[in-house]
Image (cartoon, rainbow, N blue to C red; front, side, top):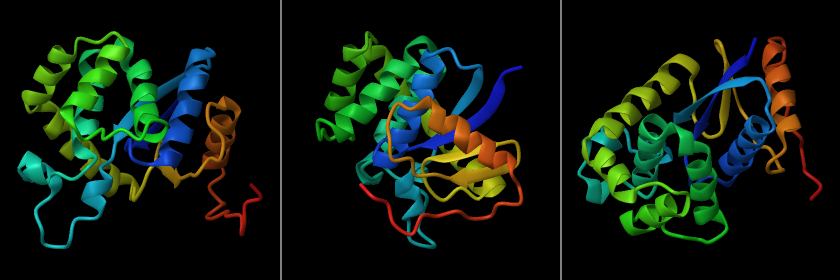
Length: 195
């Protein structure tokens, strides 16, 4: 039986990149995982109390990460066969190339680079459905698992914010999932990391 888990993402976070590349590597290696990729807006986390949430604002004041999340949701839900390629390419565009992935032109180029029809993805984003999905899934992550950052790994009712130091290492994901099963462990944090 497949090991089921979810993991939150925002393309702006380098640790989310490490975790997600490790998840993608595991899936590509054939790990028996059933993974749900959960968008979580770091822009929303930093909204001042009483201010409207990012998904109720005009696009010109969304913040730097929302547009990329919307494209990720559109690809995940409507072009699923290309999602893993998109996901890795979006993280690489932000962290290797330093691209402004809030800009539609950059997102369209990423889509095209992995064989997607950028106009079709843009049309899906323009439909408004991905924005509604972002609001629903972000709120669920906050309410149900108390997610506060990315990547947060979720198994059943248990969730943990994790910062993996290596990229594309599926064994690290297995270790995280094993620790999530250990409910007597509340916090485990290295006081320093030798790197």
